[in-house]
Amino acid sequence: MVVDNTDRLEAEPPGQLESKSATVDIEITY
Image (cartoon, rainbow, N blue to C red):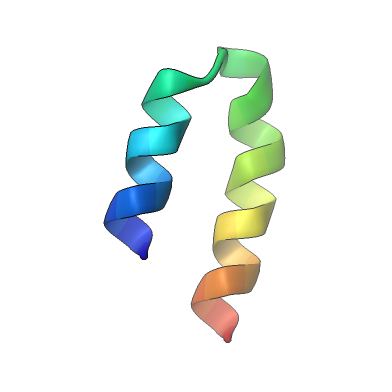
């Protein structure tokens, strides 16, 4: 899942990186 999230970060604008980063951390926790 980490790889998929990384791909999304690259596709989305830099502004979305912060929001996605928080989501990634949550997914990793689970």
